[in-house]
Length: 209
Image (cartoon, rainbow, N blue to C red; front, side):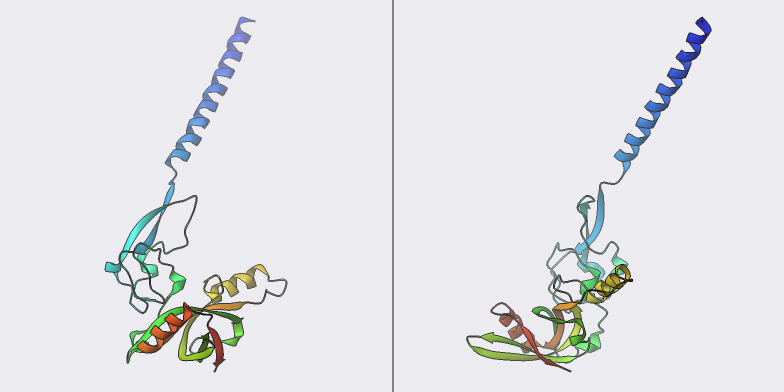
């Protein structure tokens, strides 16, 4: 009887030790698990059209519980060009950059990103020359620009969105996509007045080809 009690004691001791070790292992792993992630942010103001170079970049830590969509490594974005004005400290999103060569912006051409009255995805193509219009004080003004990049109304790269929708809706027709933002190129005067107009009214596509 005494041996039986001693045996049960050792069994309980082993179980208690195992549970304690398991709890310690779990708590240690949770404590050692990174609670943040590193993202790439702008070290300084980066104007639209500027090339992304190492001296313009910095690293920021963000809470892993509230992830921010941004480049995780510099190699994702180095050498590309900003499609809109990026403020110092702002996360840099790879899909909001372009591989646009310097030659494309020759002869005083500038870049900007504008919000437009949504149009169907297949209404415009990258490289199209289009007219953007805006009604200001009962007058319709227009600007001729070249389409550099297209985005959906949530400012997401529409090509990436299309691929995701095709994958998740493989067995059925993917939802219709709309273009809500455009990255465009034009001469300096055109871009300046276009951005002023954007703050006063809704830009819309008059025609494209």
